[in-house]
Length: 350
Ligand SMILES: Nc1ncnc2c1ncn2[C@@H]1O[C@H](COP(=O)(O)OP(=O)(O)OP(=O)(O)O)[C@@H](O)[C@H]1O
Ligand SMILES: [Mg+2]
Image (cartoon, rainbow, N blue to C red; front, side, top):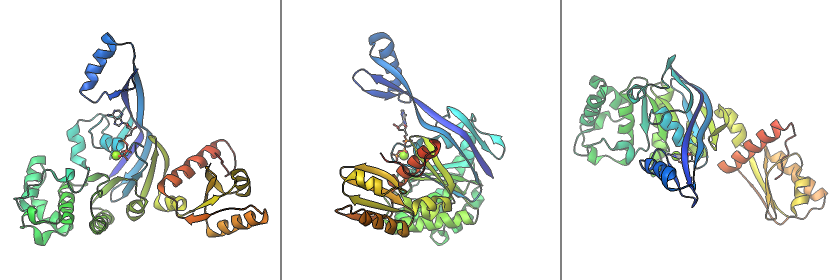
């Protein structure tokens, strides 16, 4: 199985009123807005906004792609396009050489399982009064899947001995496993998981991540997983795709990603102009409010910077060396891209 996504974009039309109220064309209200804009008001503009822009990647069976990005960066939109729930505006989705781009929803549903969450919304089809086995049999019937594989998938997710227990007696983690079992009923299922662990306790989340990892390494599942949690990305990913304002700012293996993430953030308080000067060579990601923040690649680099500060006799009030947050990595990636295209060195001050 190979999934190839080429230059995928999805735009929305936004109606911007003079009073700055905006509506989406995907809302039924969009129609009324259109009427309003044509006949009643001159103060309405139509704006085209790209939620996802030019995303490309290739994924083979048994691999996990983690899509990471801040709020509003386009993760959910990307997953909904891949699930066949939203049509792409540009680009192609090709699965095993077959172009799915304009295929009907049913064609997508045969290959993709969209899971918005492992607790509530991901498990609406579950009936608490039925056994796990019966729930899966009904699911198989509803989606035209092979019922005879129910015992096999229960075994895969470690629920074989609970097959005849009622789902109402299951713990949250067991429900999560059952949701995954349903996805596995499809041969070569590609899971599209949108922050599925939100709301689960850490213990259950670790359990589910372990299960996903082992399903993937046995090539039983292929996963595209959206999150803004670096730790989840590190635990799960074979590949990482970074989105920022809909654009793909980084795509690479987990190791390449670690090269970015395993850095230190040095925060120094003091006169900004002097600090930026002294931090020459380090990637300054923020210089405001009497503080300068730089991303460093090693402790040695931190030592060097400190030596430089004291050699220049620059007084500083405080210092923090810590692993970067997701936002700081974005800033770093974005600045680096910016300075690379401008042909400048590593320093980029704000
Ligand atoms: N139906 C829509 N109409 C107009 N704009 C939309 C629509 N759906 C999403 N957008 C816009 O597209 C952008 C990406 O949204 P999306 O929900 O994909 O981001 P996200 O990365 O999943 O964010 P979060 O981390 O908050 O879940 C946002 O700016 C959002 O406002
Ligand atoms: Mg989202």
